[in-house]
Image (cartoon, rainbow, N blue to C red):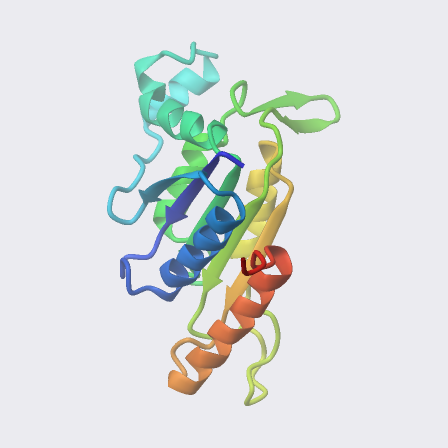
Length: 208
């Protein structure tokens, strides 16, 4: 593994739990792959542009990749193509992805460039690689809360699996942080569970 792309999405910046935990994922991957280069993109600090009329026209007319309307899209796609692992740290906003992450998806999921349409369905054009998604939520979405309240809807993880799968990235591994607005004890439990999941996915390298 030579390159790791780290996307962060929280408007809270470095203190965000999704940022803190995804930093740990990146550190673990880097430790397991000495010399790996880490590319960091804070989508909240520098949001990707929303697709506009020029972008839509370029897509529908099959414009060349160097069309000016694709400038932002090409930069983000090349960044993605250059990584051997993708790490996404994101909060759950209103049961789904934050607007800045949706904007990123809309720039990189592009017909004729990262996927093609066939009679049997869409086919991704990017080689698969490991993707690690750290998602943070104030409530619970993988199951009922400790008080027995029903799990809230989760449109984030199935959406990301579908969107990334469309372009060829099927190896998606999710690390969840839940109940983060329910006090310090719950935050500690959430972090402990997330770290245990990380250990399953990327075991710590043995001590020298």
